[in-house]
Image (tube, rainbow, N blue to C red; front, side, top):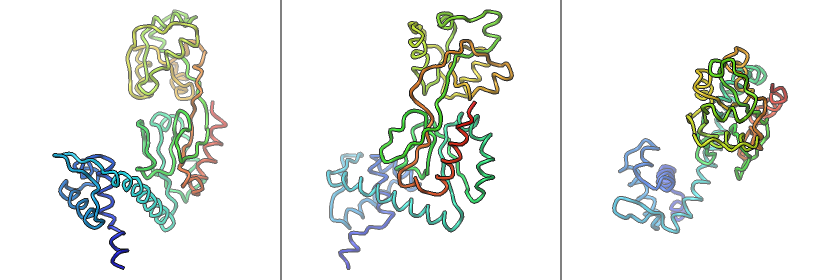
Length: 298
């Protein structure tokens, strides 16, 4: 019995070790778990004593996983993930169904949210928690059931459901263009360009697609679609933006399409779901609803 107890450390020890191993630092692990650095160090020391092995090499103020520690960290991360998922499912069963859903900021604001009351009306038993993410999401360390991703469905251990492609076209404010009629990609190349940080090659790809050498000047770089859109509306330059995300600005006349030649792109919008959550009822309902909505994109 004592041997079995020794091989089942406390969750607090395991969480302290896993966070330290992932961050490569007791200090960063302490910040993540809202504990002191000393508390993390004591938990890891206690774990090593209980198991009778060294998990870290201490070199001055830094820590490095031992060979056995590296293998143990991988296995413990998976075990903690299973515990989190089991707890999440248990809570969902007793408190109603919960869906933790990561979305892209502009896609969520412009396309998803105006439609989402329909989903909630059809699924009143589901409580949806949204998180907005520009950086890559991490299903291993974030309690997410699914996420909207633009690109390709290349996550191991997940299922990707294609929702829609996008047609990004060159747009600008009428005040920037004036009475001049844009007729060619060469003319656009001479206008200040607005770039999206997460799509750094969009303009270069569009010019190459139109057999034009991309201009040497990089132009202004902005972090989000919403910022690029507002910069274009303000007349700061020409942007290449998905048609369905700027429908309002086009209808108001704040932006106009300079050339109706979309950027050819093999990427698309996907619903990405960890395989472990693929059959979870709220995910199944969301997937079905999103596919219905995607059929009516205009």
